[in-house]
Image (cartoon, rainbow, N blue to C red):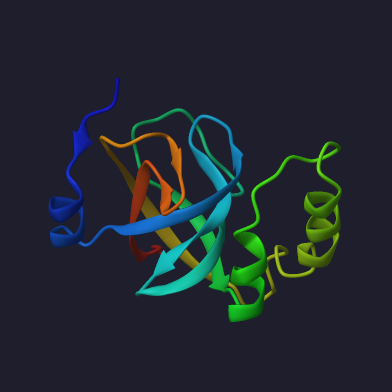
Length: 129
């Protein structure tokens, strides 16, 4: 199991909360979390199972999109979830000018999924050219 950290230490070390996960494959791939204190979508295109931090494209999430993202549900079961997935599809696509950042992941000791976010946090740094 991965080492866990308490929330106070995560914040002190510069990690920021992840709110929504859209895809997980050997680690976080696509989701919504804070970057520099503001909600951003993140999308990792290439990854491997190495212990190194991965590169992600990140771009700002509008207040309207963030509000819609908070709806719990499941595709094919919840009609409102399916409706929201269609409405949000345009926001979840990385724009051509998305920033490239490296995201280091740490886990807290809380439940995997909860109202305030997930059990993992990101610390972002610029990608090397």
